[in-house]
Amino acid sequence: MRKRTRNILIGVAAAILAAIGLYNIPFIHDKLAWRVEDLRTKIYYFFNPPGEVVFVPAQQAQMTTTPRPSATPTQAVTGDFTPTITPTALPQTVVLDGVTFVDQMHRWNYCGPANLAMALEYVNWEGLPGNSMEIRDQIGAAIKPGVNDPNLNFVERSQTDVNVMPYEMVDFVNDNTPFRALYRYGGTVDLLKQLIAADFPVITEKGIYQTLPPEYTMQWAGHYAFTTGYDDTTGEFIYQDSYTPNENIPYEQQGKNIRMSYEEYTEGWRAFNYVFIIVYPPEREAQLLQVLGPWADETWAAQKALEIAEQESQTLTGIDQFFAWFNKGASYGLLTEYGQGALAFDAAFAFYNILPEDDRPYRIMWYQTGPYRAYYYTSRFQDVINLANATEATLFSHRVLEETLYWRALAEAALGLYDAAYTDVRRAVEYNPNFGPAISLMAEWGIAP
Image (tube, rainbow, N blue to C red; front, side, top):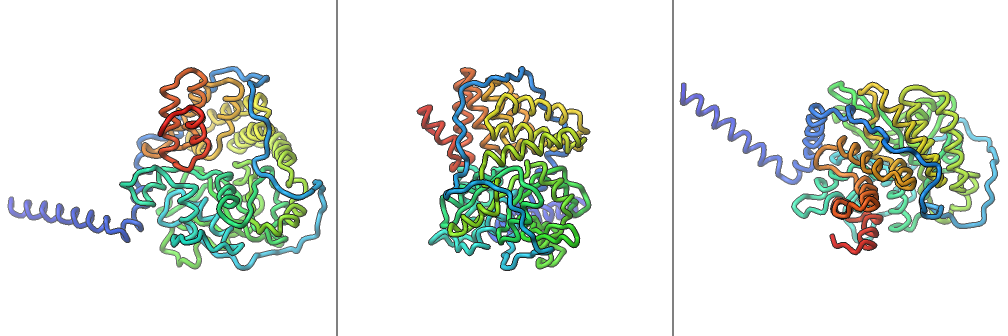
C-alpha cells in the first residue's frame, strides 16, 4: 500500500514537473500565458470583489479654480476650415472592403493595439522600418510596454499595463507613421455613417458586457471596436471585434463583420462620452475635415458632448445615468471648466454608489482620468488621493495604471507629501517607460528613476 501511494505521489510530481517544463517552452508559454493570467485574475476577484470598492468625495467642490494650464488643443489640424453642418444623402448600406482583421489573442487587454493595427493596415501602413514584429506588437511595444523588467518576456511585461488611452493611439500614429490620426468626443450615429460612407472607418471605445464560455458573464469593461460599415435596412453597424475567445469556433468566423443595432451600439458607446478615432492619409485631411463638419473643431465637439450628457443625465436611469453624469464631468473638463466638472463627477459617484454591487462599472477609472483632473484643478488634492487609492483597490496586485500614479503624485506633492509623490512618479515610469507626462514631471522635480 505504501509503495502504491509512493508511486502515485511520484507520478503526480513527475506530471507537475512535466507540465511546468512544457509551459516554459516559449511557443507553448506564449499560447497559454494569457489564459493563466486570466484565471489568476478571476480567482483574485472572486475573493476580492471590486464592486465593493466605493469612492465618496470628502471635499467641497469649488466653483473657482486654481491656476491651470491654458486650453490647448489635444490634436491640431491643419488647413483653413469653418465648421458647417451639411447633410449628405447616404447609401442605405456601406460595407468597406480591404479590411485586414487583427485579433488580440494570446495577449492581455490588447484591444487598443489590435484595433489600431486594423486601422493602420487599412491605410496600407507596412510597419516600422526594420522591425520584424507583427504590427499589433510594434504598436503594443510603444503604447503598452508594461513594466521595465528584463526578466519578463514581451507578453508578460505588457500584462502589467491595464489600459491604452485614445490619445496614446493617436500620438503613436502621428509620431511614428507617415499617416495622421485625430480623436473627438460627442460623436453621433449619423456622423459615424457619414464617415464610413466617405471611406473613413472609425475606432470607437465602448462599454461591453460579454458572455464567454463556460457561460459566465463578465462584468462591465471597456473595449475598442473598428467600425467599418452600416446597414440602414436593418439598423445596424458592422464592426470588427478583436476579442475572439472561443477557439471552438472557426477562426474565419470570429470577430469579423459583427453586426450590432444602432441602439445597442450607442448604449455601449455612451460609457466613453462618444469618443472616436480616425486614422487617415495626410492627403485626405481636407476631405476628412469636410465630412467632420463642426466636429473638426475640438471645442465644438466638447460642447456637443456636454449637450448630449446634459440631456441624457436628465432622462436616463441606472448605470446609464451614471455614465451620463460622468460624461458631463468629462466634457466640462475638456472645456477646462473644472469647477463644474468636479460637481458633475461628485454626482456621478453618488449614482455609482447606489448601484447594485454587481452592476457597478468598477473599471471606469481604468480608462478615464477626468475626475483626477477636475479635483486637482479645484485644489481637492485629498480627493485625488482617495480616488486613486480606491482605483488601485480594484486592480489585481501586479497591475498598474500609470495615469493614476501620476495624478496621485501631483496631489501628494501639492500637500507636501514629497516622498510619496516621488515614489508614485517613479513607479509610473517603471511601469510605462514611454509615459511622457511622468517622465516630464520627474525632470521638472529633478529626480532620477
